[in-house]
Length: 72
Image 1 (cartoon, one colour):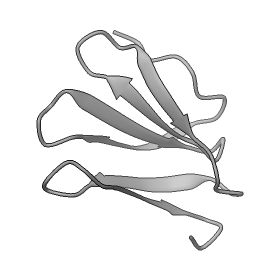
Image 2 (spheres, rainbow, N blue to C red; image 1 turned 60 degrees about the horizontal axis):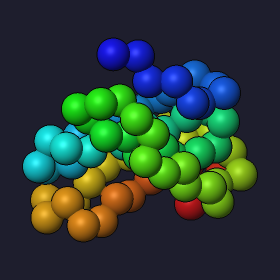
Image 3 (cartoon, rainbow, N blue to C red; image 1 turned 135 degrees about the vertical axis):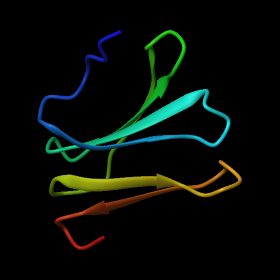
Image 4 (cartoon, helix red, strand yellow; image 1 turned 30 degrees about the horizontal axis):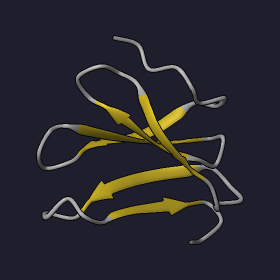
């Protein structure tokens, strides 16, 4: 399925360890969480002021890290 929601290019995607959630980071400075089975957007995380170039889940799946050009 196609995930629609970002307004900029997607630079990074990561599946949660359980495979149920997908995270994406974009040039629109957001991180979005998606239901991997349905493709539905679950959440949009805002706070970065520049493009997000990396997203990664912790092994336990409870923490998501993101890296941005804003140096945070």
